[in-house]
Length: 247
Image 1 (cartoon, rainbow, N blue to C red):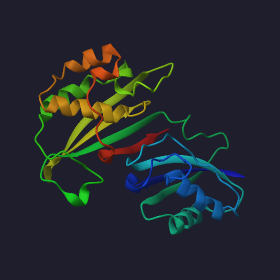
Image 2 (image 1 turned 90 degrees about the horizontal axis):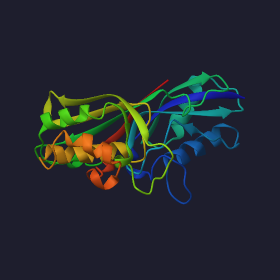
Image 3 (image 1 turned 90 degrees about the vertical axis):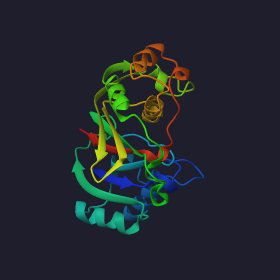
Image 4 (image 1 turned 135 degrees about the horizontal axis):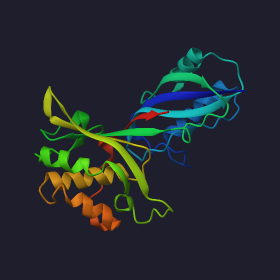
């Protein structure tokens, strides 16, 4: 038996999230069905770096799995891509040690969130948030920096999401403009770990700052309150991507 690390991308539009669930279509379900065919009809469980919600995308999701059969990385990649739906694509397969864990060994993850401030673009409605109005980008950039460092992010996860520890470390944030289309804005957040809906709640709060409803400095108070009601709306899923996972 060999353990493999898979790097893959997907358009999450037609999926009820990444994680396997009964009676609905998920990314994990689709990949495991294909791996079962490749693995001589023996069940294969893939273990990802983390889950993404319904409608959320991934550019470089990572997952490990074990196979009984003897197959090269390249043939495995080709076999997967020939059988998977067109909205899931395996970019790389590499053999890893038997104790490697795609989730536990991850040192950092990078999420990006894409916003269109310009004219509504129907062809991008599922992959870029169509906000379609101006925002104060300078204020958003200032607010982003308050998230960097170690903080309690309880204000940015659902109240029903109870856990022992809400502290997470954001290593770096950035805001990028497309030089060919300045109406396209990408928010970049690199951190060691994330809570449920955390990035979407951060983006929703940043949008309210960009609208002038809040000040950049309000982020300090929101973090200190550790209360979901103090933060902004939850941004829609279509603009969010798990961009990369670092080991």
